[in-house]
Image (cartoon, rainbow, N blue to C red; front, side, top):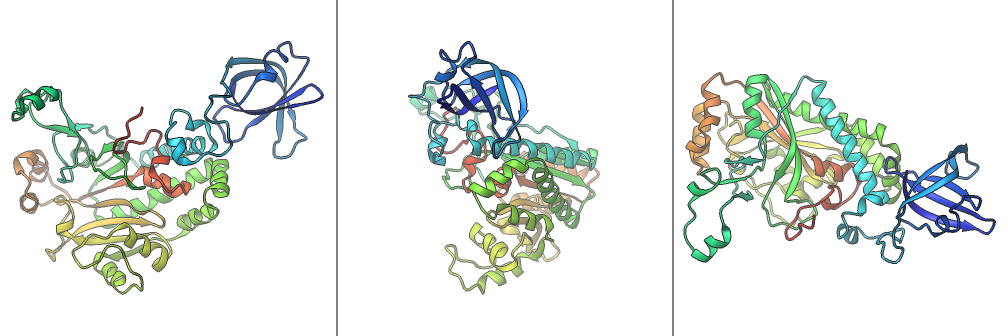
Length: 442
């Protein structure tokens, strides 16, 4: 059972169908002859996009590029596709065009392969954590706290916005569903810390949301994050887990999606498999933020974004370190505290925090994490420094009052890793239904 990809008829009363059911990138050839009762009425009319149910005999195939084929005894057409209107008639379409028909693009080779790799990668990630004794925790999608403190949250409300706009009055959130401002989560980290400080090792794997008006190839408004949190874990152990996660996941999908990776290696990025195996077999380079700034400031290259100690490292700088300096993944630690969130552990120098960013070639940052601040007074001071209201983080502060421990965690960008493993350059092509500014078709 599947969908017709192509069909050709021979003069001897034979039809050759290429049928695919989505389970693999490889089609199976179906051969039908004019002895079938519906040959002239239906089989010869089949075109790309039609769905069929085939009964027949599986035989060794004398043709090139296939081991077996089906000699059909019966072909039942379960759904016709108008050849004049079916949008996937041509063999090659631009990715831009396919984004306009996201309901049909999974039928193409590229997006079928993307879906199968996403599936295998999801399984590999769950397996990785489950085999290491982590508990999978479901953190809330609707939240009253902004983990990053950056104000880029989508608002959730049941208030009548049209009436408020007409009245031009002040919003009274006490009348809203939750009685206070609420939004879609930007991260499950803070809630995951609650469970880590009760159960030891936990992880989340869920959608997160950023109301950032950005139309770059790296940004989505809705994307998936993997976020482990570990009690009794310092920055060194955190970095080791991050590297293991990348390598273990990569090894699994390379083994279980061989045909799909062969397709991407041939048609998307011809050195893809070599680059993935290089990552799998390399030891990640480790350096401090200060060392990274020193290297970048001496680079014989003009960057779009100027650098100085205290400024954030941009994607172009991250890729330069990976691709032109070390030629492998890089882990940068000990960032200035003023450019990092309040929850990161302050180093003894008082200027930097125990942060880590894992950088990959072609992508830049794939993981951002830290050892979390476990000292109550320091955490309270950092919340105030960031102009946040301590009363909104009373429960987070409580975790430091009652049995605090050294603990760490990170966020792993699922779609960015999908970009890395497939070689696709636009993040909108590695998620089934991309959510971007002015784009909400489905």
